[in-house]
Image (cartoon, rainbow, N blue to C red; front, side):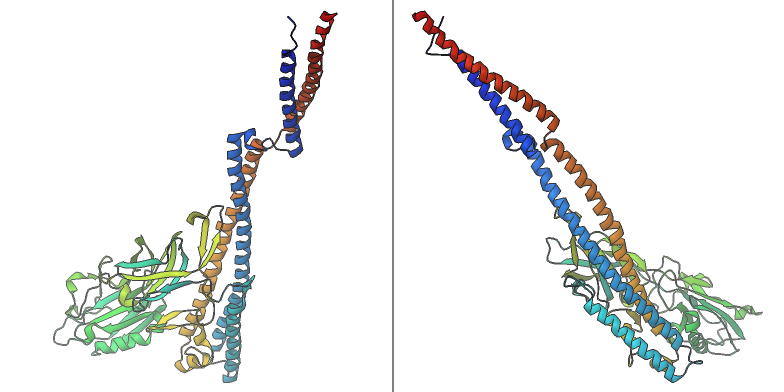
Length: 515
């Protein structure tokens, strides 16, 4: 049958030609853009995945830049601290030289003091001027701000890390669960009740402590208060001090280490053994697990063990529920949300029954965004305290905190003041404490750069490479396949055009039937 109103072969040829032309346009678009997915219709599921991957890639790329900048900030800070460390080392050397008073003149010591003053001023100047892109690094602006510290409980607080995300302040609660202790030995006097509180025969004692060993001899008939005075005159050489129990010669003597902590100890031995059992020398100690009692009402001799040596004990405390690391009167925790170092007051650290001490971290610190997502897990918070002379080298002595500035001219630990006291020990401790403080800060920043930033940037670079490869597999065009399909589409398009022409010519054959 031949019909002219409906040219079905032509319609079929037109539809095929349209599909071939669409295929040809698709291949040309992919080859011109290099992408397999140019619109949602190309691959709806693939588009969703690749857009998410692209978002991750942009975040990782910016996070890598953030880490590189953070590393530059830390490197700049560490460089300034290295100069401070060199100055502190020279200050300590000058103090050691000045302490050699038998071999240097007053003028030489004055010259040393001038150098020390100049070095301390330089340290403060570095603290005030060290900066990165206008950001002050060592003047305390990157340190945490604290409020509510009870100085009768906490002598010094240093916060290294505190997470303040979504909170106005971070509460820090300290609960002493076991007291800090000094090494302590107790002597209850001679056993002859006719002559209490005195030595019945010549007594030679070997006193050993963290600072060294001394031997001291007391004559017969000497009061126990004389022994206490003699022991205390040797404290600088032994690290051991003595006092009468309850201030009463008839109650006995307590020999104790000057410092608290497990590294402190006291040893008291009598070198000349007595011939009379009535003149025996014996010292006692409390068991390690025993918290020292209030002995004002009488000494509990039945609770002690015979011993000639005793060591101290570190304070044991909970900080925000975490068991802190104790070191003498110091307690510290180190976690991702809170890293703090506390120097507890003696009265607080030795009283487990005391109420908990609470203070707040209200702000501050340097916050580094080191990951693609803004979460606590991908942020690094660091506190960098001021290294000005008024903030370095805090040493607690007799209830007073001494800083590096006390070594300057006119300060409590200057060379001339130390000469007048005949003791450079405190000045040396302040200088060494300042060196340790800066060294620990440098080490902490170095650990952050090496273990946090460098490892983080390597992991993100690896993630960037893998995500880029994944995105490419889904989104990018395969040129080999696309060019092959383009050739096919071109051939089909040409063939379709020819077939459409033939289909249109077929209808004209009807004219032959009309003659």
